[in-house]
Length: 504
Image (tube, rainbow, N blue to C red; front, side, top):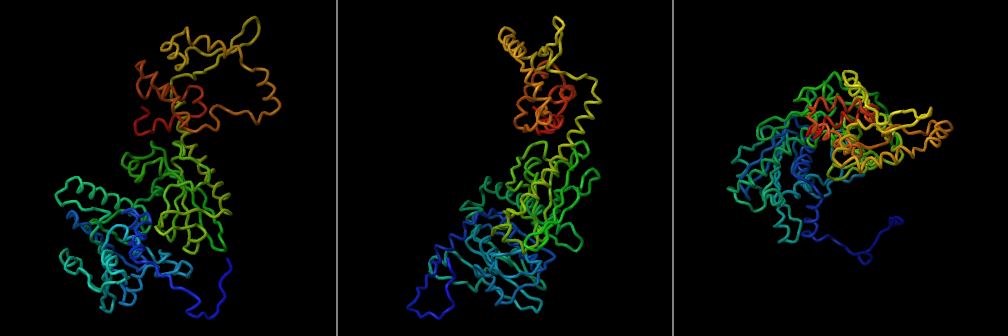
């Protein structure tokens, strides 16, 4: 569509189609925020205001529960506060300060509206000038206008000791229908859910803002008086962590950096460190790219639609991407700052880096499996055995292979033997020889290209067979790494060993 020409129009040439306040405000509640992402959006504002301390308070009182977020940032004048309370207070097309974590000018409003029906803000600048405003969604609906209230619930803030000392801002959420609903204060199940939500917020903030929490002169975030410790997904303090070479890529003239990490094997970590490194979602889910904008985490553990699956033996691969806020449009950063997608012209480079990192992660498992295999007193267990008959070579399936042996016993030799014999007598030996001679590079190896999810049922079956025969867990894994086809792909055995249920 062509842009309208810059000409003077008379009132007869247009209609003013103002949005219906009650309809629009309810739409603003449906951006898909969770409680943790909504709170994180408000912490962004505190960081942009150069706050050093952010104090978050969760107060339980059933339907009268509330949440407050207080910081010691530079505060806002009355005019600045009114502008900040206006939906769409900033265009994403405007140039921003490098430190600015916002984009659309919607975060304060949409994040707050997503959780509560009454949001109040009190702010004080270093000159001591204070200002207060309140959005009450029920009042907007009844008034039919965007009436920003000048009166806030100061008594509630004073009641819990939420005061601004020198300068800063307080955001108060009341009537939190999306958090507590209409539940009573004595509803123990609802109270338990409230406590669980607080824990989820803590874990999320520890991850999203870990670089601010870790660095000297950074920021302190408190929840109900307790400081949050940052959660670093890359285990940079561990000697066995591999930091692969960083790369600089360019996006429309701006530079971004990509730094891959391969985390240590379980055997190199203490139990507490391994548990902590699993993150909010668990080891397998946390693999992939971690996208930061101005050191704020946007995406945690995602292969960005580059064609990779979250496989167990790749879970040690985590890749850090650092973006400036000038790339928001190219990376499709959403309002919630929880989704990003790379531009098409960067996909090939990112896929190449991801592939190399995943391969290095597999090598950690492969090395570990080979070490165990060397230590094992068991000899290699082969599925196929070479035999001679009438001076010629033949190949037979090893009846002592654990899976074959258990199948013969459980299903019955009379049913299994005909199948085994058919396989032995129909091996396409001549075709294999010709293909191997003419196109040796196209001959696939055992389990080549297989996914862990495809191999796991086979491992589970063999594991169960050994169990039934009285073998201990360690004895079973010692045998698995010396058995075909796993002797050549020990990373699958190691991934199976590390499952939370212990491979059972």
